[in-house]
Length: 380
Image (cartoon, rainbow, N blue to C red; front, top):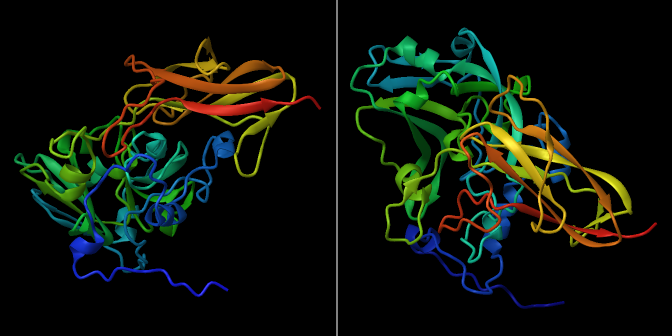
């Protein structure tokens, strides 16, 4: 039996436990802290891309702090600030407004971070931080109209009940939207209380959360408790420090907002347990997956079976009324013995196409470089 004990530094202040963001050193492996984040946050198993609507237990989760345990019967949402009539709504009052349901694909802004070189040190996502759900609730613009927006209002600030410390800053989780986005009709922001026809599960923001179609997940504030309209831009940590595209720690950077186009493939065949390398048999196969973008509708998906040397257009499922949800795609492939690298890339109506090489930044945000799936084709 090993009698050695792990040496643990004794923290003396918040600065000792809550350090600045950093980039991993060359050759540095995943840390214990990153493993702990990966254990409490989870991604979509890629075989679950077969579901049009992701079951709640398979939908990705990213939670910055602890998941608060909230009593729905005692919960209240306040709407205040630059409004004519401040509101305090319990769940029954919120449900008294006409409800709508939107099918929305949600993706974490850090999806793909662990594939970057050098690697930003944080939640180590590969490509699995995504999910699609039917969210039911009240349009945010309905609540703001009820409260009466004052002419001086420029932003809506959303506060969750989750509380913690990040890079030395103690905070409630807060994000904001420009008033034009908060009041938009397409995409229509929701104050949601149901997921896939049932009350929100605890990990997805019970009893109420924000859903912002087309935006990365950091904007979809969970455990929502307050909406405040301000007459100046919001400068909170998650808005002006955390979620920014930066090449160096000294620059202000640009804000992370809408989802870049991405296509994911359902891994074909069956996997090796540890390496996750796929095994298939020779012969005709159907490659398939999902594609989405928060900037414009996806118009094309291309597939490569030779690691991006050649590309062939896949067939996209017809567009439907779910304009902020992923689209299914498929393409034929005849597998022959050997090792193959499969990949897919999406293009949207704005002309944005997934890159083959990484779009690097210090936070590891918006890395929509193409997925690569290694496949070993073995005879029966």
